[in-house]
Image (cartoon, one colour):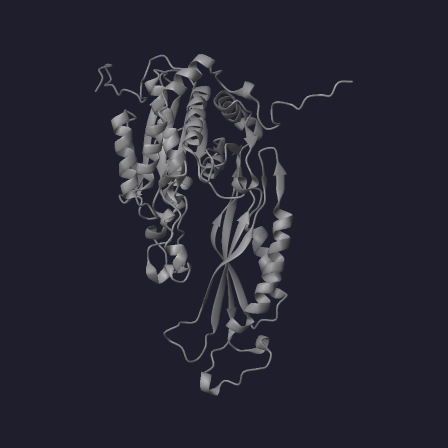
Amino acid sequence: MADCPEPMVPAFADPAKAPYAVSPEERDAIAAAIDTDELVDLALALGNIPSRSREEAAAAAFVRDWMAREGFRPRLVGATPERMNVIGEYGGTGQGANLLFTAHLDTESPSGMPEQDAFRYRESTLADPEWTRCWIEDGKLRGYPIANDRGPMSCFLIAAKALKKAGIALAGKTWLTACPGEIGPEPIEEFSGIAYNGKDIGAHYLFHHGGVAPDYAIAAEGTDFGLTWLGCGYALFRVRLFGRGVFTPILEAPADARRHPNPIYRLGPVIDALHAWSLAFERESTIETPGGRVVPKVQIASVRGGIPFDFGAGTEVCALYIDVTLNPRQKAADAYHGIVAAMRSVDVEGFDVEPMVVRHGFEAVPGEVAPLVGAVDAATRLARAAPLERANPVYSSMWRDHNVFNMHRVPAVTTGMPRWRPMPGDMTSSALIYALTMLAVCGRGNASGDAGGTTSVYGDGTPF
């Protein structure tokens, strides 16, 4: 008996489910319309605009101006004038599914506030130019802003331009969106109020107030050309230990640190207990699904205790802040009960546990997301002559903004270019995949080169 060949289609993807079958001729026309130099120049220009969390205004203005020049009818929608979502659009000339692309404007980086950064980063880390600068070296694009997330953003912007340049209109509409706050921050304790809002004023705000109604959504982020329709949530738990403040000159220090009145001395056994819980939680929370493998992780994020400029009597309170990843089928309560049980196993004078931040993860319904996954698979085959693969578990084990859309029953995935050190050719491939996906989802429209939108009319039919 002859050996059976390996199946060409991964279990999670079927290109035949794409709403529209893109022809080789359409593929060639779109590919010819993508200018690699223009794409790289756009990514570098956008990536070199400083855009730490809470400082996205200049990058948003750049994207808005680019969209306006290219005819994508941008508008700004935001909770504050300093942190706006940018929304452009293309297509909508016929009857077809609507697709939304989103990427975030903020970049992972030190805060820029020396009094905070000194307690989180080494000097050599703070000096790394890749936090805020992007350039090409040895044929690869360098810089955190390119990797996360203005490289993928540039890819879908150029993808829409390529469709327009090739004269290929879309029946359904594609929204092109750039959002603040995907990385963070989160309001906690005295660091509260809208100035510390992250995700709530980004894609969340966009979904509710951005004038969009997608059938499908793609969070354009680096996935090494893989795809997943799962996303993890997270919770930050504060565990406070209580003790007694004793004036240092009268302190009688016990030989056993666990008997010390200062709760900071109890951190050793507490950390041991929490670490043991976290390892078990990670094992029990790992799930395998057709759309991705999820491997949640846990880590102590920070410690607070006492006041360094007001010393002399120790402290009565210290706190650990525990960052817990939640798989898309878990609740924060699942972790809460485990942390409380771990704390009860330790001999401490008193403690409490409070969830300071809670964001649950989500996943698309496989049958509902299948047309979108099929479209990306068909596009990947046309662009890279290879089937779409399931993304590495790291990409399904974190928060990305496809969670926002899956939360609201809009089937969504995350997929994109290589996450780290992409080459110009990688970005061109990613832009082509995005453009082909736009066409495969939305279908070909009736009018060439239309940038989308509707014409408003008076009651008698006269345009205005």
